[in-house]
Image (cartoon, rainbow, N blue to C red; front, side):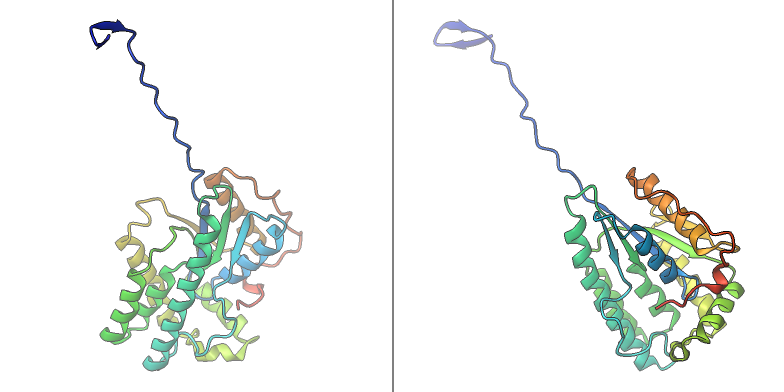
Length: 255
């Protein structure tokens, strides 16, 4: 009871104010993997299949279609400039992604590559310490929108076969150092180092897809399953795989 001026009054009930719950942010899924594994092909096919879903934002690898310098160059100066450009593109993408998913629980962003790509390749290229430090410091200064990484992989020799097939279609990629088998293996190794350092596996932020003997549609269907399971949102019915669908070796080239 509450005593006021000698009179007894009824106890005052405290009513909890019901706070308005935030809808929460949307989801970000990054299709990642070493060059030649088929990321961009899968990304483009996903975009084609899910383009009618207005709650999905498809974010390309670069906002600028043609990079000013080739990625992966053996020339350290060119490689450094390419990584700076790539980092810049990732930062601009991050701003767009944040605006799209913040406070929109029903929205999904599907991006070609994860921001961690910048660091993986910068390490694999063995840039001078001062150059790598600049790239890494810029990367760590950004508040990245947390993503779930869908990591595509295959046997390194299989990936090289895909690169050779793709290279015959686009001669300009010879400048990208993609035909270097040891470079490819270094990139794979650096990705794994970064995943461990950032506790990506431990925090359940990665799903791996082994693409050996899979078609592009196989991979797309698996990605749709992963996204639907994690978001509990229905994207689209499963894609029917044509009877004569070719394997990943015959995928269209990445861009």
